[in-house]
Image (cartoon, rainbow, N blue to C red; front, top):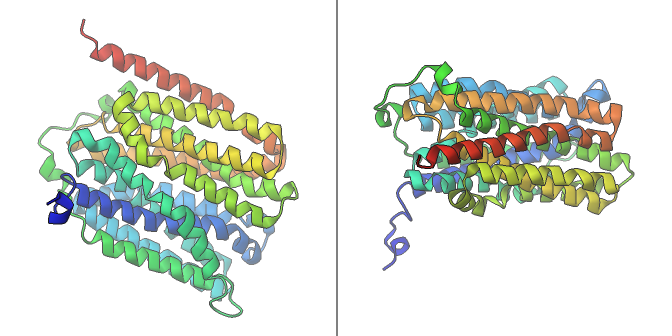
Length: 402
């Protein structure tokens, strides 16, 4: 009889990993749905059309702001409790967005998206929790499995948005945000079954001073690489609908481009962990930055639907390699007693830069245009690529016998 037939886990910690991956799918479905609808609805609610993308920007800011208190709460109360608080914020945010739509209040709608972003700030620790739930040899695969939960979001998020569009006559998309509330409630139910040892139980070593931890070249390369990969991806993605509509492409062509971009972001996760185990995190990060660079010439070749589609798919796959590679490299730089502190610094740094990129995307596009916006990311991607090459060489020399 197989292990599955016996009801035993595939490997120690796999049950937690699967629960976290499923919760990730619920969270990202909610976020992708808001990414698809918030700007459209914002344009109808905002007193000034230039504020239409503010709900999305505030959602990203909420993610950055929540990252530090989320880590502190999880240190004191444990991972599961922190995750349950995060999912509760998600349900509250969706409900507040519903009230904003019903009352035609832009302020309430924006406030709801701030809470939704905070939900993601807590949920971004799912991948670290998965890494802590498995043996060291399976860390990269556990991280990848959790990130792969986003594949479902590529289809479920936009589909829920369309399904709920006309549930309530005269109140477009109220049903969509009510369905989004249900996603957070499902996540709450799943997270209630997660069992991960508190940090205090697994930590028997003394934490080093923060300055010593941050002095590690591998840690700096991991944080910088993940932040650059994420910021470049979000800036280009945020500007894409504006560029497509500005090129007179039909509005219904935007959804498949974003949808397949999200597939590109998460589908590679089914094998990214195996690639990291075989070739190392720095090498996978390098491939990610090369893919992110490769999207740029495609954006310069033309403004047809296929140009946008192929560029955005490459952008998604490049993000996957850079982000998961950076996360895997980061887990090699801290002791168990240091994990929450380092993870909080990483999340705040990554999403702080992502917030800046989101806020600047519309301005850059409006001021300089689509081609220049994409050209602008080239220098920082080259620096990130060279940094990844440098850390790979450094790590190889450190493991080579004298």
